Image 1 (spheres, rainbow, N blue to C red):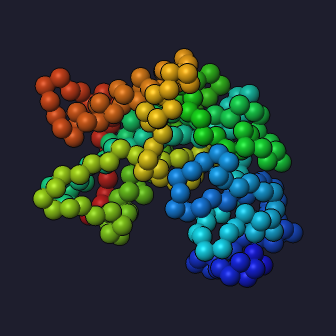
Image 2 (image 1 turned 30 degrees about the horizontal axis):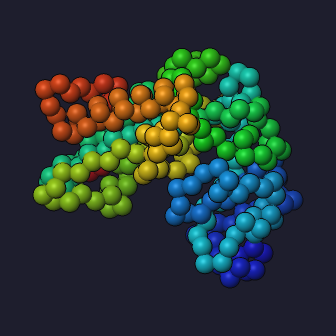
Amino acid sequence: GSSRKHGGKWKGGIVPPDDDEEGATASPWFIKEADKNLGGPYIGICQRPSEIRNFIKRDRRYVVQQHVKDPLLTDDGRKTHVKFYILLVCEEDGVTWTLYTYRRSKLSISPNRWSPTDLSQDTQITIHRHPVPPHETVGWKQHWEKTYLKCQQCTADVIGRAVKMGKLKGRKGKKQFEVFSADWMPDVHSNIWLFEFNMSPAVCQKEFDDLEKRDERRDKLMKDDEIMMRDALSIVLPWGGGRVGLWEKVDMDYI
């Protein structure tokens, strides 16, 4: 009904279920404009598929997703996802690609206990990065090694497939690189789910320049970001004092 009301249509013929279908209201639905890297209040949240239409505006494109079933929570019941950092390099020949992933990627953790019926932004939208490394985060560190390896392999699969399909293309005669992130959410069944890639990842954020907004959390994040970015540049543009740091080269099938 929502697509007819607003003169649009669901791409690929996949439409949200009716409210009375099994599982349709078991967990929240998220509505986000497809071409904007904006979180928090810019993401709509509703409980029923029929309510999605309330967030849709004419002549805009949206991604609509239902919450992951059985998310892997912290020991005290809070929702979290992995902000997984990636360095992708294409050599001057335009066809040789190298992928690196960062072992000390970040967790984003909600301040509240998670509930599938709590539609508040703080409970459902985990956008604030946790300053403690995942392998040291009390209540979640026991999941990190397995989750990291799964995120690493699945990221390589997705990017390799994008290169094969021509969605990612190099420029002959010009070496290129990009540092970006992927949002992955693990569930209790050892699966991980990809939300999106962020080509403008949350690193060295502008808000950190405002001394009045600086605190211990932001200072820690800024220091970590600086180390990560410096080491990434040392890989792309090697120099005598450079290092690989916590970046790990990943085998990728893209031919």
